[in-house]
Length: 86
Image 1 (cartoon, rainbow, N blue to C red):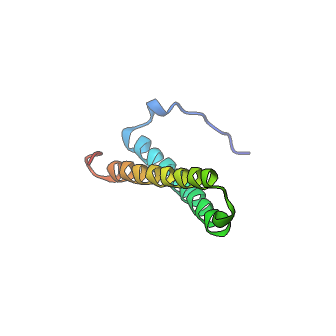
Image 2 (image 1 turned 90 degrees about the horizontal axis):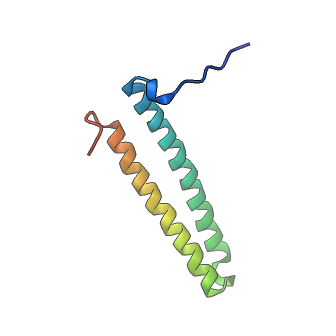
Image 3 (image 1 turned 120 degrees about the horizontal axis):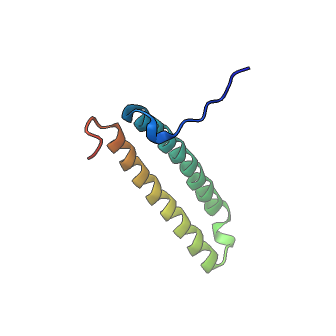
């Protein structure tokens, strides 16, 4: 049976910490992208049946999700660059 070892991230070497941050950002980008696609599909299918306020709210949610994906991609690029910033 494999034993699980809990490690404080602050004690990890810088490169390992950076790699873990990259992996976490990549997972978050995928999840948010899936959420945005789901919202977009919902709007495409049911958009004409929604009241104006609900439609506006869903569009705002979609735009904010897309903005957060863009921000996370910027952060990812910064983490992947040799200097660690852009």
